[in-house]
Amino acid sequence: MGYEEAGRDRSAEPSSGVPAAVLENVFDDPTHGELGRDRIGVHLWWELLLLVGLAAVSWLLWQEDPAAVRDGNLRTLLVNAVGLGLLALAAGLSLRTAAPNLAVGPVAVAAALHYAEQGDRGLPASIGPAVGVAAVGGLALALAVVLLHVPGWAASLAGVAAVVVYIERRSAPVLVQGDYDPAGSAGYLFAGFAAVAVLGGLFGAIRAIRRLVGRYRPIADPARRRGAVAAVVTALALVVSTVLAALAGVLLAANDPGPVAPTPGLDWTVLAVGVALLGGTSAYGRRGGVFGTLLAVGLVTVFQVYAPERGWTLSNWMVGGAALGVGLLATRLVETFGRPRAGSPDRLEPVSDGRISSGWTMPQSQSVDNWPPTLPTQPAPQPIDPWRDPRWEDGPQRWDTDER
Image 1 (cartoon, rainbow, N blue to C red):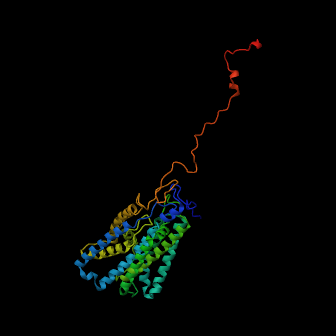
Image 2: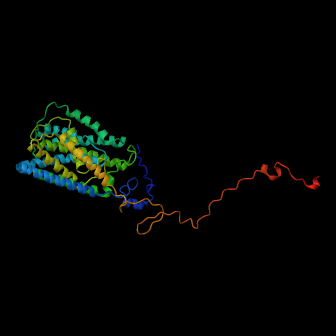
Image 3: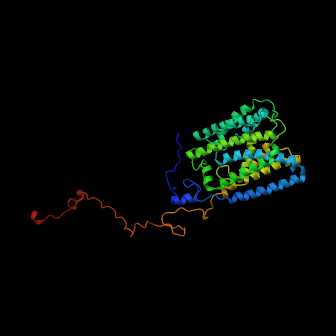
């Protein structure tokens, strides 16, 4: 199967008229993309709003119950934040590659059930098979997406069906058999998650990496293939996304003293995708923030602790649906204000021929090679019809006297 990538054999978009060297340095996608570079300012403003929201909800929780953010409760809260953060990273990574993985929630539940059943065998023996199966499943999903070139959400729904079949083999909740308590290393786990989230956002803000990760994002007909590089990057992202979901499920199961319920897990998918969008990751792919995922995870986690303190009973469906709704608004803002501004210095206008050294462009009415101007082209002479010779015209004619 070939991976056609329309236009990759050209050095520039035909309609732009800009040299390839300029395109390579200024455009986010030199062959197909919009003129100019993505703007990051909209992400920073949105992340400032998330920071204000996180501070407000944290203050409300402190006022309602100070003990909820102290000692053991704080460590439990941090581990829950890491578990939700891994799911958000899994969803966000697949979103950045424009191949959403909707199976992250069911994979997390399946991994939690496996750990609950096999936890008494030790961490390596219980986590290793779960991660291995998740990697194989992610690879199968990736091959279906990139070889058939179908939308990630559609292919991952088939994966959801397969994982739910595994989950439904349990008819009752499963008690966790292991004695691993992640609360003892809650600080290290949260620091590691925060480092991965922020570093991933920083690398994603680099133009070359953003272009590489987002190459699978459609630019014209979404059914057209985007090239072998886009296929490889998307496949790796789907594999890593599925593995992160499995690790999140194990961590959440180990941190919860209660049994693991054999639910389909789609509520966790809605919550994970909602948090990723809330953090500023675009639903269309490629675009994303720096601190957005970390702040969104913190905001949702603290809110889930604050809600019961006020007597509110909120399920993952409700919290995830609200986050998803606000996240779609964030996507609209990111796509509207994240693209190059019309008329800005980063946005080049199409040109025809000459350029002044200061960077301004001006169109020319005709090529300088055609000087002096040529005269208008004369119409070609019409061929003479011999049968229309005046000597053969009808009418009275004068005969010569000698002929008489």
